[in-house]
Every structure is written in C-alpha cells, then in structure tokens.
Amino acid sequence: MATAGQRRGADTKSEIRKVAIELFTERGYEATSLREIAERLGITKAALYYHFSSKESIVLSIFQAHLDALDELVEWAREQPPGPELRARAVDRMVELGVGSGMAAMKFAMANQHVVRELHHDKGRENAFGKMAELFDIVAGPDAPVEEALRVRSALLSVNIVLMASRGLDASEAEITSVARDIAHSLMK
Image (tube, rainbow, N blue to C red; front, side, top):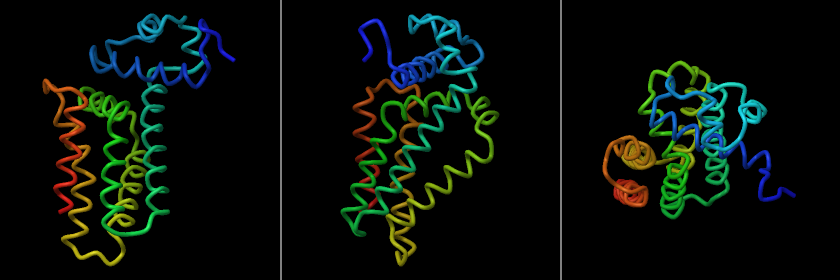
C-alpha cells in the first residue's frame, strides 16, 4: 500500500495527465517541458519518464482514456432497453464523459489544434467517429425516423459543442455542465 509520500502507478499516471493538460492549455504544448510537468507534480523527471516517454505519449494517453470511456458508454447503452429513458440517460452519461478530464481535453484540443491534428492520427479519428456512430444507432434505435435519429445525434454531439464553445468564457465547470445538459435534453424533445 502506498504511504503518504508515495503514489501508486495508476494514480501517478492520472496526475501526470491532469497536470500536463493544464500546462499545455495554459502555456501551449510547445512551450511546456517535461521538466515543468515533473516540477509541478513534485516528482523527478526520471519518475515522469517511468510513466511517459514524451509529451506526445501523454497526449495520446489522454485521448486513449477518452476513447476508452466512450467505449464504456457504448457498451452500457447496448445493455439498456431502448426508449426515451435510454435517450435521457445517454445524454446524462455523455455530459459526465465530457466534464472533468473530458472538459480539460476539449480545452487542450481547442488551444492546441495543430498538435491534435499531428498526434491524433486518422485511426484515432476514425475510431472516435465509429464509436459515436455506434452510440447514435443504439440510442436512436434501428427504426428511428430521420427526425428522431437527428435529434439523438444532435443532442449527443451538442455536449462536445458546448464544451468547445465554453473556451474563454467566464463560467465555472458546474455552470457549463448544467448548460450542456439542458441544451442536450432540449434537443431530444
């Protein structure tokens, strides 16, 4: 068991991702060094290298964690009975996916679009799009009329749009989350 002065590996990786994304968003990806990340965490650069070999590997890990969470959402949706309750709960879970580290990742992506384009290879984009398409189909149902299918797609996508639009806005994460949820639910009506 880890003592107060020690961190467990998974916790350290999570903390590294969190601090790195904060610094990348504040200062820019290129202007942030691994040394600065290690200093902010109070660990050695060698300890940082134990978990991540480069800034690129940190960013890829952040996006992989988001894809894994999206996978979990798709699996959860697949196990639910179809209908209006699934739609409402899927919106809520999409909002939960977007807040916290998801919101930080979105802000990073908006502030460092060129980096995301370079690092988030076509496979990653296709993978995310495929997972979202699968989620759309599950939540809307196979026989959904066009309007209903588009309402489901718009509602789920609106969560990310609100998070992207919140960049630079003087609002708390709680306010942004509440608005994202309200907008997404209103699109389902």
